Amino acid sequence: VSINHPGFIGGFCELATNMYVCTTKAFMRWDNTNNVWIMLYGFGASTATSVAIYNGNIFIALGGSTDYIYSEDAGATWTTSTLATKQFDFFLVYANSLWGIVKPNNLWVNIGTGLNGGSAWGSNIKIGDTTWNINAIVANGSNILIPKADGIFMVTSTPSAVPILPEL
Image 1 (cartoon, rainbow, N blue to C red):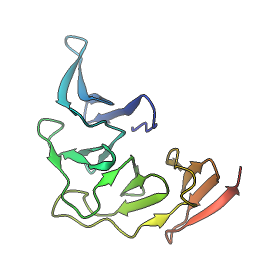
Image 2 (image 1 turned 180 degrees about the horizontal axis):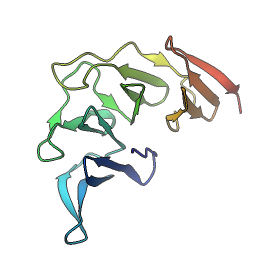
Image 3 (image 1 turned 90 degrees about the vertical axis):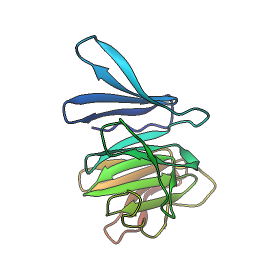
Image 4 (image 1 turned 120 degrees about the horizontal axis):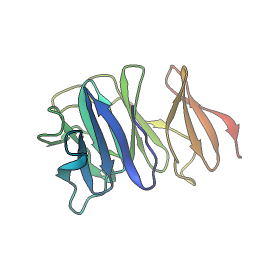
């Protein structure tokens, strides 16, 4: 489960039997025994914008100007991405791939691991023009939908972006 919204928190996620929350400033795990959140990682001057679980690893986006981080051990240690494409505003896991958004209008997909030394991110897919920021990325059945102020776009299997409700 991953909830991505550009506002108040990066999101909630579940890995194995643990529940996690990613606020803008910390990543925490719920302690069922003591009924408290335990901080696993603080972001310092950075701000988390999204969290996703992909291939059993935790990925945290830190905005379009800060390299994303990931954990391969349920949040015990963290690694900063060194891949060529490594700065994202949102993540989405869909169709066995990790998708990343960079405002105002860029979509990337990684069909590999997303980890350092893994597959590079694929080609950049432009979503509308640069006048308006992407607001979110949502998987809806067999489609990815991307709402913007200038319309709602659907990502096709090619992949490319097709406006389905242009100029709302």
